Length: 448
Ligand code: HEM
Image (cartoon, rainbow, N blue to C red; front, side, top):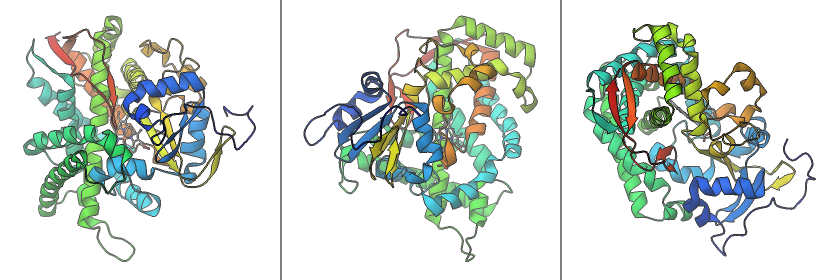
């Protein structure tokens, strides 16, 4: 534990003094990831500051993060801050709920993520990727993020809901594009949840749109239920008294899976294409592996274990550009972390962005080096020095799904194309819920 040398005390960890009333809230929200990095640099493993919502602790040591997410997870919930940001879109679905309700939600959805089911999804993932590639033309220029968002959205709805969503793609994307920036608006973060705000009206509108979409899918499923898809399973689920789930609950779960299940993977693929365009040697090694393992064929589930370099690229990309840049928890019991007292109601920030770029765990941390991901290196890392999918009971339910999808899509993209960045500007990452790039990443594609 990082704080072994400290004595438990009433003393608060070091951190910025902040301004009267708002404390460091404005600096933290405006400063984004730069603020988090500066806090770690200036104050060390545990940083404290005040905000109107109370004490905030930023944890920068993997052992302290493990303490919160794994060993003492029962002392922490997602809390009010999390609800304010994601509650308006996701309601009481698996990502936001707590306690018994969360356990029930997770039990209901879990079968769809069983390794046997995930295998079945591989074919859908490659079919839909092939359809996207067929529509591309040599020399074309486009936003790679938009293409990846559409593809991963089609994949998650086909795999988990058993439906094609051609008619809804634009509506879903514009709802999510309107929602995400609104969540991190200063008034939304600072003011109580019941204060009406323009950003909150935009969030409510996005939810209405997704409700309409999901209602359409549910109607379709009621007419022709599937055997394995999540919606049919939710429609059939009964509680101990034999009652079905409420319509709102089904909507919340479906919207949660739809959004959590595509934005993150799309962001990850976008950054991977971005860094590969800047690392021709890595790209050449990737293409070499694809030629060797696949010999021009479409990848299948059986090929995946042999795509070891492809996997290292995905891992390294999620290290440098973690699709979820930070996790927040609220303490529901008093705790002691690294020797410091943490009162009930404190906000705990754990930044993948900061920990994944810490030179204590990663040599030359800003360099993109897939080669570093040897088995030996992974075993030598502190457990929570790499946590793109979080850890503990609330670890991402879609981690295997996402890793499979990212490898298959990446393989198919680079079997066929070389991607050239249209601008050589560096990018700025905006930490809303995911780490979207601030500027659109535009690429020109060249057939191999
Ligand atoms: C690269 C892709 C992905 C990344 C980096 C990622 C990351 C994460 C992280 C960090 C969490 C924990 C959030 C927290 O505790 O505050 C999480 C939770 C979750 N993710 Fe993912 N995710 C990815 C893909 C997916 C996919 C493909 C799905 C579904 C198809 C999915 C569904 C979920 C759900 C439902 C939860 C909530 C789990 C719970 O609270 O029990 N994710 N994800």
